[in-house]
Amino acid sequence: MRLLPRASRRALIAAGAIGALAMGVTIALPAVNAMAASGCAVTYTTNQWQGGFTANITIKNLGDPINGWTLGFTFPNGQQVTQGWSATYTQSGAAVIARSMDYNGSLATNASTGIGFNGSWTTANGTPTSFTLNGTVCTGSTTPSSPAPSNSPSASPRPSASPSPSPSQPAGTPVSINGQLRVCGVNLCNRFNRPIQLRGMSTHGIQWFANCYNDNSLNALASDWQADLLRVSMYVQEQGYETNPAGFTNQVNNLVEEATERGLYAMIDFHTLTPGDPMYNLERAKTFFAAVSARHAAKNNVIYEITNEPNGVSWSTIKNYAEQVIPVIRANDPDAVVIVGTRGWSSLGVSEGGNSTEIINNKVNATNIMYAFHFYAASHKDNYRAEVERAAAALPIFVTEFGTVTYTGGGAVDASSSTAWLDMLDRLKIGYANWTYSDANEGSAAFKPGTCNGSQYAGTSVLTESGNFMRSRIRTPDNFPTT
Ligand code: IDC
Image (cartoon, rainbow, N blue to C red; front, side, top):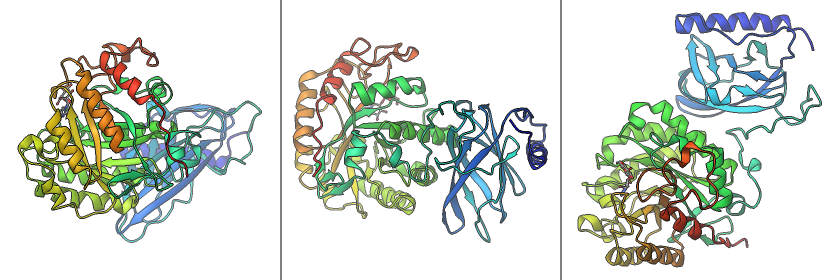
């Protein structure tokens, strides 16, 4: 135990004054107990471009356990926070305060948490020289060799968001085996340049079913289902992203972190649906993908799906949208695979009387991309299967969404059509994500209604007919090539 150094007390007072100024009210900072040991270490890394930057911050608590924190720092060159995640930011002049969220406020001794933000700069960027955590100046090192203040076992820190999350991924998982993926011809190849098929599940709309995505359910997806992939479905309309861009960006980022911790690939689905013209959401898409691609640039497991189901628009409009959004992602994350939706609710045009020839003759002008195909097995059968098989000879295709039921998301499971579809996708090594890993009251949901109010997700007793069907398909061995 040691007394709080004078500098720390000064910093606390300063931090409190800044908070009060920014908010126009007095901020109650967590009380600092002079008898408690305090200490912290901060790493601050940035990716920058002309006029803007992304900062990723790792905060490590070297003192006694804390419950709720404020991180204070001062920009050297008049930068501005424009959008933050995993903390609530207030800025007054050059002084910034980041306040913990409900879910990351508790930090055991030696535990770390990652936060970040996008910012702007005019004359120069530059790194703050000093950070305070609950008023204590952070002087420690974030490397594992930093001295532990007690001999109590340290809480296992969640892997930080960046800059290099890969080493914290568990061994033997889809991501640890396959690594960074890339498009090779019409396939998706792993780090050994061998074609692979990813099989996984899509969330339902995260604005409605957030309670279905928690440690237990995601553990079940990774371990019991043996899935390779989590598609994170963020609706843009229908009470989605447009109502709270920062909040939904955070929610997506957190789910990507959860997938990463479990060695799953994460597909970020910008779930446009109605209106069907993706151009309606072009500016939102650019803002959203700039933020998520910056945040996850150092990861090797993130796949970007830039528009869910364009409908009522021409292929050339979709292509134009893609050619504006893809560069935003590439600026941060040059090697990530990007998936482009197709005409007629991602039917390769078939549901609007077209076919994949319009794409084959007029491909998106970008590399390392794939095209989305969606089907609902009780509605879409032989003519759709024939078109996918034909298209797959010329285009890299990913089935980023499909249901075992009708296109409404409801009705009975069509087991024979679903089996025909999945047998074909397996044969062609086309990856897929099933709609939905949720307890929605509709036939496409994998869990019985009410499941997400509880804590049990593994096994079959909680599953619907569709869930049972999908779990047994996904659980079979992947046999990913490793040479
Ligand atoms: C459906 C959901 C349903 C929700 C509706 C809202 O299953 O609970 O009320 O969206 O728009 C899609 C879409 C997907 C649909 C799904 C089933 O990508 O958003 O989800 N579907 O209708 N395309 C074809 C089918």
